[in-house]
Picture (cartoon, rainbow, N blue to C red):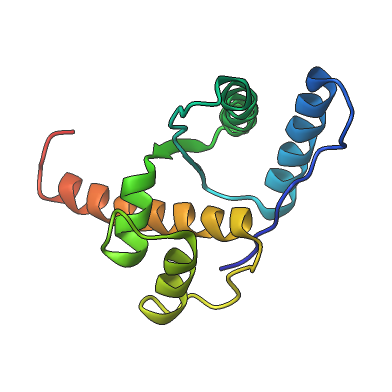
Length: 142
């Protein structure tokens, strides 16, 4: 792992300004770390539609920043991410963090739950990228 953190938007700002802040932060991080891909966890809607809409907008901003930077952009469902990290699609957040550290020997997993989730998404992407590459070499159609 090279870097992980949580971007916090200024509380009390209008949502459009918070999204603009998020977009500029993601652009800056992309420029600083020069990744080859951007992976994000798919949003699953729950009962709180209001917060789900805000998260969906923020996810869209992150996807846009990645696309504008010319990155490969992939989304993974929570089940995929948990399976990659622990082998159990129902794993808790602490289980995912422990799985990354103990089973996969990922060092430096942040204690912040959102940042640790991001590491798990990145780990899932790396696993999937290996599988996609192996499939292409074997001539398996997409």
